Length: 226
Image (cartoon, rainbow, N blue to C red; front, side, top):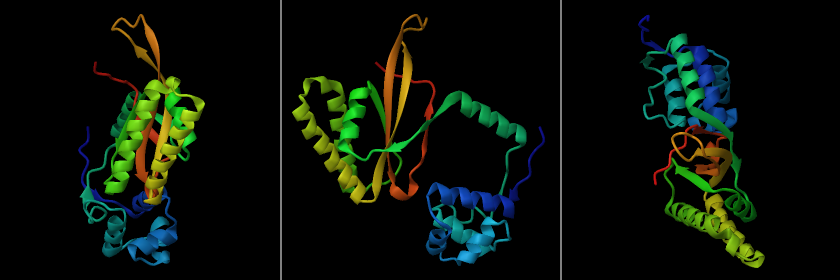
C-alpha cells in the first residue's frame, strides 16, 4: 500500500468541512460569522472554496471548539480511497443508523416507556448541575415506569406524565433537549440461536440545542451482562 504523505487541508476540503460542521450545529452563515468574529463575506468565500488565511482557519477551528485551533493549518495524513471504502464497509457492518426525534411531551415519554423493554442512555456533554440532576431523575422515573406501567391507573399515569413534563421543561429552559430513537431488535437467548426473543429498545441522549443530531449511530450487536 502506498504511504500517504502529510498535507494541509486544501481549500475545497475546507469548504466542505466548514459547511458540514456548520450544518451539524444548525448554524446559518451569519451565525458562524458572529461566533467566529469573521465577516459574512469571508464565510461565504471559504464555503465556496476560495483561499482562507491562517488566521481565518484558526478562527473557524476555534468556533467549532476544536481541541487544536491550528487543526485546519497543520498537515494531516489522509486515508487512501481503499482505506475509506474499508472503513465505510466496517461501519455499515458494525453500526446501524436510526432516525432521532426530540422528546417534547411527558405523554410521549410515557408511551415510549410502555412500548420498550429496555433503554440505553448517553450524555457526551458537560451539563449544568440543574440539567444533570433533572436528566438523572428523568431516567430514573422512565425506568421505574417502564418496569411497572401496567400497575398504574389512567389517572396515576397523568401524574407521571406531568412529572416528565417538569423534567423536560427544566432541561429545555437551560438550552438542552433529549432526543430518542426506537429499535425493534431480536435477542438471541442462547448460543445456538434456537430461541429468539423480541427486544424493543429506546435510545435516549441529551444535547445542547445547537448541536442536536437527526440520527443516532448504534451498535448492531447488542450485548447484555446478566
